[in-house]
Image 1 (cartoon, rainbow, N blue to C red):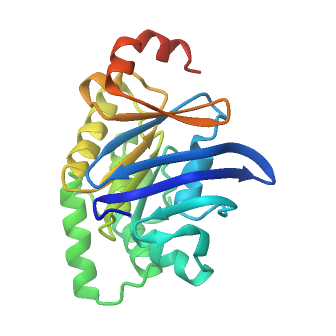
Image 2: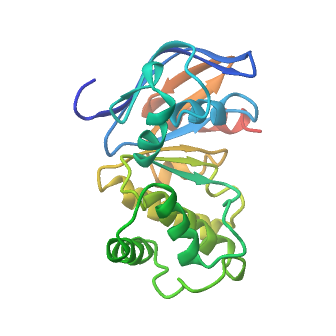
Length: 240
C-alpha cells in the first residue's frame, strides 16, 4: 500500500449475518481525501464502514486500513486499529448522564490514556477545534443537536486518527447546522485525515466537492466528478 493510501480494498465481500451485502468491492482512499458514500437505505453503506473498523469480519478479499491488514487482524489488535479511526454517528451515541468533558474522558480512558495532564490538554484542544471550548461542563442533553454532533466529532478526534468515518452526520440536523458540521469536517480533511461520509444529502456535493462512491446492486461504484456534476438529477432520483 503506497504511503499516502490510507484505505485500500481489493475484491472484498461484505456479509451481514451470513447474508452477502456487497461483493467484489475495490477502492482506494488517500490521506486528506474527502469521500462520500451514497446509496439507498439498506444498500450496504453502514456495513462497509463496519468492515473498515473491524465490527464485521473480513471473509473474502484483501483490505488494508491505516496500515493494518484486516484479513490477518487479531482481536487484540482491534483497539489499536480503532485508535486510528474516528467514528461519527448520526444518532450521536453520547452518554446523556455525563458532561461533555466526561464523555470525552470516558473514551480516552477506554483507549488507554493514563496521563491526566496530557488528557486535559488533549481534551481542551479538541473542544477548541470544534468550537465548544466553553461548553465542556454542559450535560450532553443540554446542548442543541448541532452542538451534540460537534461533541461527537471532538470524540472522534481525541486519538488523532488517520481516518474519520461519518455515518449520516447531518441526517438529523437543519440545513444551517448541517452547513457548520460540513465546514468542520472539510477543515479536518485539510489536516491530512481521510474522511468517508455516508449521506443521502446530495445537495452537499457542489459546495463540498469530493469523490463519490455509490452502493448499488450489491456493488460499490466510484463516480468521477464529471459524472455527478452532469447527472445530479439522476443521483437525486435514486435517493431514498
